[in-house]
Length: 281
Image 1 (cartoon, one colour):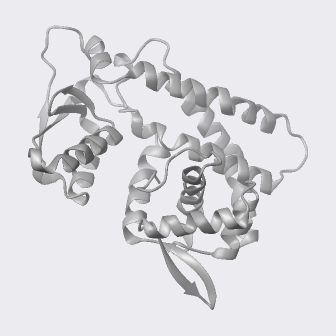
Image 2 (cartoon, one colour; image 1 turned 90 degrees about the horizontal axis):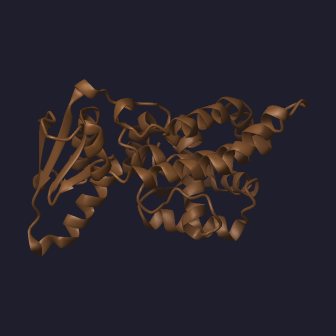
């Protein structure tokens, strides 16, 4: 599951944040039952997150206009299904969001070399955005780099987005004069990424402490709300992170701590959250 066009990853109170929460719910719970949720069930689930019905309906309408959701009635009940394109993107995203892929020093790199005519500047912007979202870093104008393990995903995304005609992909080894661990800091803004990981830890470490301290039985509604919030905040980070080999990362890298935190919360919240959703729908 990943962020699809039309929804950000921030679970805040803005319209884009509400859309992100809905996409998270669909990614976690709708795909397993054919991709459909009734409007009534979605309103009840979002109410647990403190979102009222008018805001939910407004966000659904925007997701429909962006081609993420499609209206569908099932057994006489009004609802919405994920579009085929949205489902494909979410399926691809599972590998990133719920995996902990790291490259190795020996695997090498994949280079994306592109040229977009001036008359198609919008496509150039789209291409750069997609490469960045895939985890590529910029070596120079028209030359982007990523660990070799991102090749399959990059190929598939560039084909789906009809951008492959502008790009050549190359397998590469680094033979430069500086150490690769020094160069990666110029290809990616690792300091900013580390700061995002630190922010994630600061926001959600208290949540994990809260759940670890609970000795009474689980509260499925609370577990659901917390799980949706943490996953909505987490799911953009694995896309900004190229998955560099540990030897190439800064010595104090917050990404490992953030991943440990996310997966600890997932283990604690997944089952009671699922139980709550099953009861609602």
